[in-house]
Length: 386
Picture: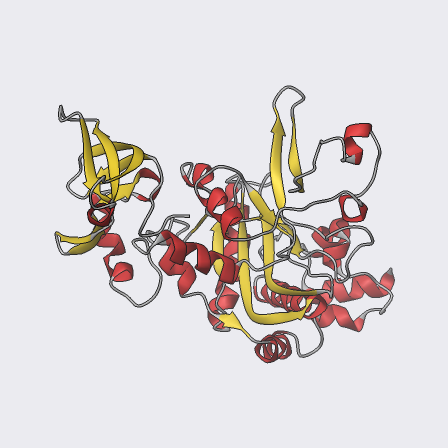
């Protein structure tokens, strides 16, 4: 991870716009000072050296506080400075903050299990892709999969899981891999809840209408939610964060209460694009880690305009880090207050008048989608009949 005494190799942009490639780090023979070795790409100056202390300096240029040299993965064109100027001058983490500060912020919000995370794999030859727990022993002779044995990773006696820490996050952010978090802890608590809206089988207008309905309720109730365009670009995630680990069943009760309230406010919205709440289960499945969710801000996805936070017009927010920094986290007491406000008759609203043996609509997808085409009164009648 980058600090004041080391830097990543690769392409850098000088604050005046020239491009250079860092090829290594050297030590001055007399002073023992660390020196950056770099080559000019767009001019004929050849190989040069620069004290690392100077390389990492913050300079003022056109009214902005900038790094003297910025790695290509963090570079923002001059044309975007104006849009980000309010964020870069505000208190908190922002685009020009140090990488360590950004990673710490990321970890502070996307807090799931720290002992394991999921890593995406792709096999182009077989045409398959998915996520598996990141493990140092995967596919080694110690791994049951290597011997065609079907053993759940959570029950494997040879597992050596990679920890979800700053190193894992940094590799995700710079594009070395794609990671997902397991939000539910073994004690069935969580620090965030995600709403998954997926528009694969619906048109874009339906997707945006459904997402807007949730966002409007959040605005009405003064609930701070982060909105992210998903990694695939075909859906959106809402994220709500907690200051403490709260019971998963309460977090999910908040989520279902918010959805029910939005349904009651927007009878003309189909909600066909609503997929699920994450965590999906109230309790930890035996031998597993619960479901996972892909985390945002992965470099290669961001280059496609995906895996980024968006504003009310569904445009990418200029300063992703300052946006995240200003998303409020809630206590258990505050979440319970939201539930009471959103669903004074219970998390299913008028649906709670039906038999208690009926499953919740978001746990019976087909029934849920049919109910969404009716008014809440019609839904209540239907539940009584079945």
